Length: 240
Image 1 (tube, rainbow, N blue to C red):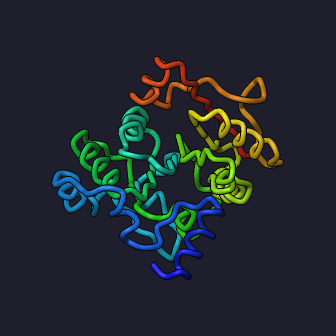
Image 2 (tube, rainbow, N blue to C red):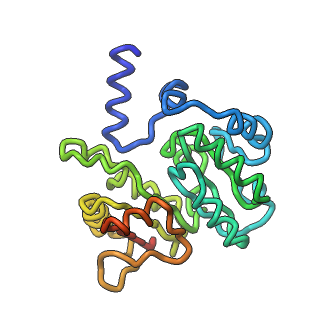
Image 3 (cartoon, rainbow, N blue to C red):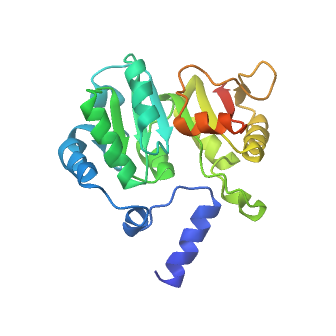
């Protein structure tokens, strides 16, 4: 990678963006298993959405006008699939730059007969800006994003004013931005950023965090954390 490319990559990271500057950025994160590759080959045409220069038409994509839930960074997709299966009256869209995660999610979703789910393998900010119409989402989910736990890296956290204002454009009035993290410092950062936004309202009756809602599945990672005494913080802010 050239020095200029490295500089662009670093600048984008500092803006809190998910980066996919070059194809090898994804493949470096892990090799696809044969099963994951086979799932991508077979099911991407049915489940996959490409980055494009025009807005997605959700009613055409899903064949209905149900509320759309967008999750950024779904990992291997287990909880996203569980949520989609539990709420057939909603449409779910997952964005993930980690290609093996996309393959795993496709494999599991197809095996379980999930119909109300679409996946995107691209930079989340570019998708939001280029492909998601304003006032078209009912919920945006951001669960356990990279905490960038070192203080000098806090500026790289995705939850920043610029990002949450972009989400506000895409959310319908009354739509919810739901975050979860197992890093208390990041939870405090999220709360500080969101409380400063005039066009969001905290749904917490205590003005801070929410109990984990039933619709967010408890992951094995969380269960292990609870046994070890680790905390998890949910934040839910409604667009005014």
